[in-house]
Length: 514
Image (cartoon, rainbow, N blue to C red; front, side):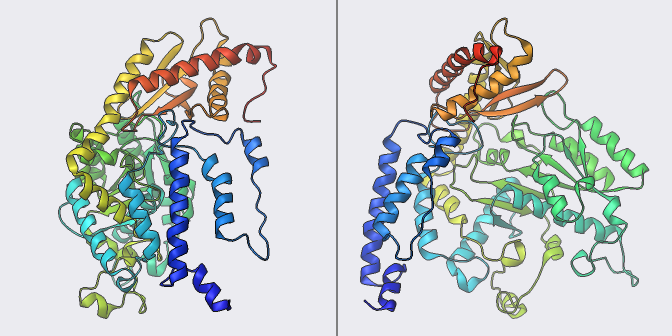
């Protein structure tokens, strides 16, 4: 067989042998996934120590061949992967996925369209534009094309604070001829590095600090606002901080409000925050990576009251929208503010093309090459319809309340924060157990259950006026988990705590993570 023939066979292309190999091995892969799904165990990889010893990468000059390599991938990766659809997989914003999303992934991967120019994704470009328009209407922005699909919340938040900063500098700094200062062309004015600030709550996603650091502004540019006992931004504290910053000669470019904090699921009081930002002339970005799912809710849409007043919004579809990773979006209210990152490359998005109505998505994105992830959401919405989709989102909110009530009524468990969305923060508190050991007990209960493949529950810290304690976390967003499932999980939590509490107290316990 010639090299070219071997190349064609290995490549996904219009070659009879390539097509045959694709069909055969895709069927093998689908069967392997089906078999994996039928295993009721949440996780079979063991502890990190066990998993590390089982995985090795040993390529050869000759290669194994597709069938052998596929078999090895099944053994090393698939069979040792966490089942995110399992009713005891509740640690993170890590959702079970829609069948439609899986099907869309086949089309996305097979066609390998790139969203950086219309001629690399003709249909995809037009479909994404229409979906952005639909999302804008759902959040209350009205019809338009100012927005783009992203890799997720961190990238969308970066776009929000980047545009807010450059908008702020353009407003407050002028060139000698009176024109607005352009960070894109002239860089950041020297004094702006210290003067420009971004505010967010103490419970906001870490990407706010991370993104400001990447933008060269440093962590010092981010001022955190205290939260109330509901884990929401304290608006009185926000008002005082804004006043003080103004008195100190600082300029607040942006306030980032969170709709669905990572741990507590708290939704900041958007309308009150908007009023304050208006008073001080600041941009309002809403990180709705999680809570943004409520725009489709049949019952709880009012929890997002005021979201339409934002200047920009982050949405994430690989959380409570049940799409496969990655799939997010950034929405910009005023399309004119895209001028701060507009760029034309002749080989991608020439002025000639734009003048003739060719979609220019690359100027709306921080990415150049970009997958057509919008297809996953498009296919899901068309297949399910808004009502069924909304009921799947609402299920998690309803379940959370039931779980919280159950925890409060169960001896040995303590609810730490009243839930607002689809997250439950709680801990194990055995009767008469030393208070100084409860944090360690809760940490290790979670690690033990994961290593045994029984459950994946989160571990975080709750700090408010009443607590500064290690917490267990259940993210109850799955539309197929029931209260009985969670009761079973909590029984395992209590059982595991009982099994290890004595050795922890005696100082003889070996952590499962070791």
